Length: 459
Image (cartoon, rainbow, N blue to C red):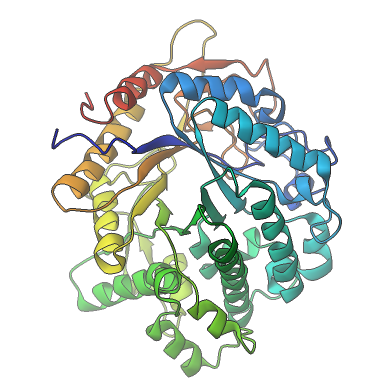
């Protein structure tokens, strides 16, 4: 029994709304920034995705068949509030109410994410997204409404998917930012505004919803020094502090990293901190800490020009690790990095840890008859689950559960249907919707057995 996970361990699947729902112009939904993105050679548009708006019960049946007891999904802000800061759309809210009930009926714990990059188009065009405090206010209004509507039957909440991405240059793509020079000041303002939006919702939940739990989430950047040169080690440590611990400190201790704030002062960065902001963050607490993990990389300080902001280190100095295998998308497979992250979070912050995204994206096709033999996916998840078990049983980490990413095939984050994470194949391509049939892969039956024995046997 020492090798068996606790009885309430959560096994499940994570997705976003724009990568799954489709129905971009149905049910009173407003436009999001994704709805104006055009298709390209290796990217679909976002209008249909996998049509889960109409087919979610079929997908839930597959999850139930797998034995899953948790599903992390995202509410589309523009589906429940078409302008983002206007009137709420009751048809959209009823959709999610029914959606949640369908999960609960199948014994699947719903977990809500409030924002996964799909800013309502109106807020992006009018205010430049999270660069504006007006959008913070709009998000808080939206988030509180969702908490009030669903908090009595949804226990687990996160506000922002991979919140530390707003500390990186990609922030300008995912925050609703549409116009500007993409300055360091703007990056830090977006970062702070997103933290304030998280803070207000987390504090609201803790003040008003007795049984709900909320935690911060980040895409943990596991970055090793490329060599044993002290400067490589310094740069790897600074990346860890600026991208990971800056948020984790705020989530758990109510304060930004001292090192990050000293950098802000030294460089004269304007974060847009207003009176009362830091006092509100000081009230912040988390019930768990969650993260996504897919791969690790290394930093070579020789490639980083002097006076480069830490936020840009990886843009300049990222270097492949010669000791790791890599996917066809050049994501380096590193189960030990997963174990390392679980330890670093738990040992420093002493809160339960919840990995809520993990998986391998692979180009796959189905011949319409034979089962897809995805042993590479089985190997990937087996090795990462073993690393997680080692963190639990050898290292003493408290882990709530394990959620795979897109375990029923979805559009990739770039809209590319070729990059598949699922144990269930969805029969569509980038520019041919086909019949959207769901077909279990070999990994489906392996994962079903793993969940059935609660992770005791990974073979």
